Image (tube, rainbow, N blue to C red):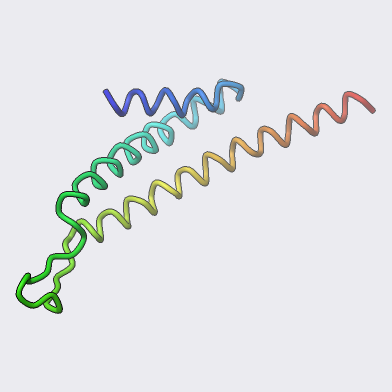
Length: 105
């Protein structure tokens, strides 16, 4: 349910782009929605467990928990999708502006 809401939120941002282009982006939008929800869940879990385990009697004895590596990879994937989707959205805006300029010439 959360993923569906996030998908619809992202889809709303792309409401003004061409239907064919939107159909092409559909999988990327779904994946971006999944990654965002996964990141939220990982952040909640990391809030409970922390990123590092340590010995209470000797805090210098530390061990990195697997979640600290997973969250970094998931965040990088999410940011990659966001950057690409944002870039596509930006290109559409620029193209629209260029078309508007041509109409006034």
